[in-house]
Amino acid sequence: MTTDLALAAKEKGIRYFLISYTDLFGVQRAKLVPASAIGGMARDGAGFAGFATWLDMSPADSDLFAVPDPASLIQLPWKPEVGWLAADLWMDGKIVEQAPRTVLKKAMAAADAAGFEMKTGVECEYFLITPDGKSISDGADTADKPCYDQLILMRRYEVITEICDAMLSLGWKPYQNDHEDANGQFEMNWEYDNALVTADRQAFFKYMVKSIAEKHGLRATFMPKPFINLTGSGCHMHVSLWRGDENAFADPAGELGMSKTAYAFIAGVMAEAPALCALTNPSVNSYKRINAPVTLSGATWSPNTVTYTGNNRTHMIRIPDAGRFEFRLADGAANPYLMPASVLVAGLDGITRDLDPGKRLDINMYTEGHKAKAAKKLPLNLLDALRLLEKSTVLRAGLGAGFVDSYLKLKHDDWNAYARHLTQWERDTTLDC
Ligand SMILES: [Mg+2]
Image (tube, rainbow, N blue to C red; front, side):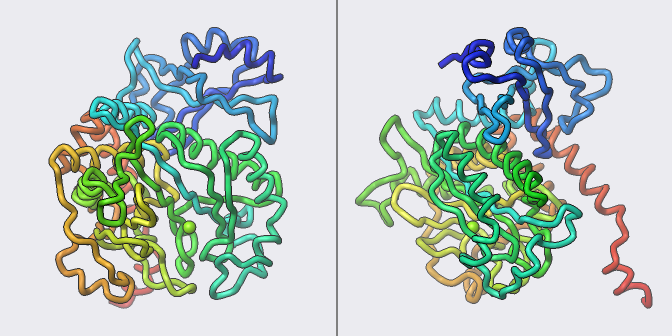
């Protein structure tokens, strides 16, 4: 479907377009373009200096052009005179290989060549905090087990329903909202879809939640572990592969209703999981969620080991229902495009090589994890994850060498910037050495 954006502007009363892209660190960059100029921008793209964003470019590079994808158009529900557009990046007449949206499209093209379409649904947990970022916004939200707490949820009725109403108006089919396991933490769910559609929506969702929270005098954060004693924010992703209208992961005769293809995909994801962390858990802070000690609520709800299971939330991969699995590793810092791209590449490799994930584990990993002796451990920090990504031939081949090299370069710089910080913990424990 092609959309004439100038015509869409007239019909929908759009005065401005945000031509937007997500860079390698997940930051959304945009130009605000008046509707009168959208014809040329839709054809040639909006110009940016690539070096000024996280894309591993040089100040000497030519202009970067963000060419909007008309199919991604979303009218801001809280400001309908603005139309948001996800864009693909071009430079010197060539697609920018390391742009996250391009990386996902490349992985989806490989899936398409094998006859598959990936569908995903994401559960983006977030905290509502004070504008200064120092504490959760509701001082009375202090219960040890605040999950699904009706009273606390309803104190945030205005902001939660504004976001949910927005998703309803956009046709995303949202179906539930709740207070999550940490004080100050919420989650909202909408229907799964084609992985690129979901990725664009997730990028927009993060922007929308932050914007609507600000309108209400609050601040929203998707930081994986903003408070050390509370459960962190995951971004659980539900994954299935389809052949047209047929779910290729479903098989009524298979174990837990899952097909051989599904198990091979899961095995591929498990084989690459430690290296995948560099993309699904991309921040220094991410490792304080997946390797966390037990939190105030009694569980971290995040894995530290590479295992899969049936309907049991203590594992990295859960099969809650026939025909899909839940990938519980990724967190709120995961790039909406790189997360599905990397999982797809790993899963397709599992299918190509007909990998077997072995027998599922039905134990409680939080209390009996020590029994899973053969299971691989997830990396303990970002540097270890980056080193594993560096060694992964599967991810390099599937995501593209240009992308992997650029990503590793910027993320190593990120780690080095962190390592230059002197923490209070070091002073507390080493001052008297
Ligand atoms: Mg949740």
